[in-house]
Length: 118
Image (tube, rainbow, N blue to C red):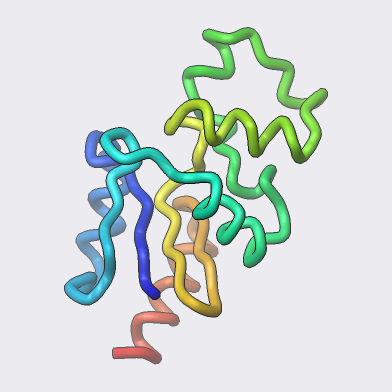
């Protein structure tokens, strides 16, 4: 299994996706087809944290007046399932690995992953 969860209106996502050959990957646009609980649980099994999967940049945080510091793991899961913008993106998911977000370290790990597996 190789899936990428992304947002097509996110310039950073499209820039990252364009760096890699994703011809044999399932591309999943999360606004039009939101993440399921089963998929989120699969991400959790590899990341060991819903908080790691949570985007602290979501505009919904301010709109809903959410105090992120008070959230527990179950709250992060619930919010990600409620609204697509709470999922940090992009998320690259394979049978054995997960790459979350657009931080430089994650992008370097992705580049390394694709170089090894090309």
